[in-house]
Image (cartoon, rainbow, N blue to C red; front, side):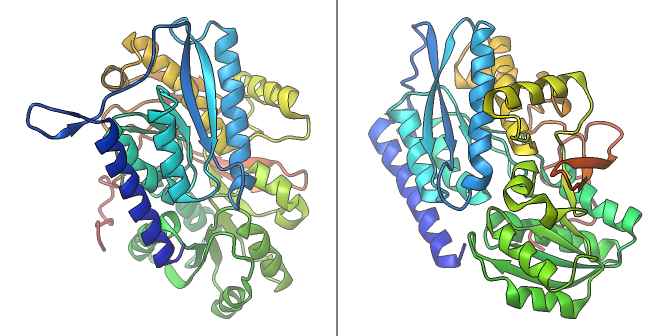
Length: 412
């Protein structure tokens, strides 16, 4: 996203937050605005909002997140619902635009009166929604790996933060592949730029040279000049934070240049993107995630079987959709532990809530609203599936602000 577009998205999100405060807020004793809720818990159902890009450049990734949320809701309803109430889904399309995500979030909270919202993908969409959820004191469950450096009382982050995905990917390249140089490519918005700032600090501390850094706007299909720079720099590996369908153009240009022997580690390409792009294009490339369809456990086998039965035997499962699926079950566990749909009660009850997810056991950290996750590095096969070649010995405790790493300095 170019600076002007990002500025407009931020202004739009701020305007939405200001509008909803003025329209729906009440006054607290000190005269400041306070949000009031229109959530109705008197009947036999509860409304939940699903907010995903069903159109635009991010639809390649986000449609399956909506699918997984819908499947989880149907399973929960078949098992008696949440506190005996059936989930009523209100689906909205974020259309791959941050300002649309902010507007639709406000609609879901104020007009549809949902108890919580599940969705978002890009960090720009999350950043645009954050002031809406905070000003209206509602809950967002965000299912995608991201750059960290954030913890909101009104967001639960069920995708990985930096130390659970990006750092394991970097350590694998250093320890197992033996790299000493790295080239960074990404989409031009919050997540890739922030993540790459973190990567550069890691690299300096680990004697790895960053030999280049290139960005393109989401949806960009012209990667020729960047590929030329990679070929000239001759890195040992490329770290890829490109999102959405821009990956198709990048890898086509990358392999056309004859660079297939230089490994790429991607943190936003999962099984559904592989299927959409064609496994023949990506075979042998590396990914860093926390879940793959090939995880060999009874829980994951049941999850994969149920998803394919509902959406088609040729439809793969992937990390973000699994994290979304997990998020709805975690919400159910929080509500039932709190015995309440009230936001404050759920926040108070969240710490220590667990779920035996397809990725493995996850536990909510009540302080930063992230969850424990097992780190996994995978290799893409000719069949389009990703096989684990390394995983952490136990679930990694979330450290969104990298407080446990001496090499990291905020603002550097």
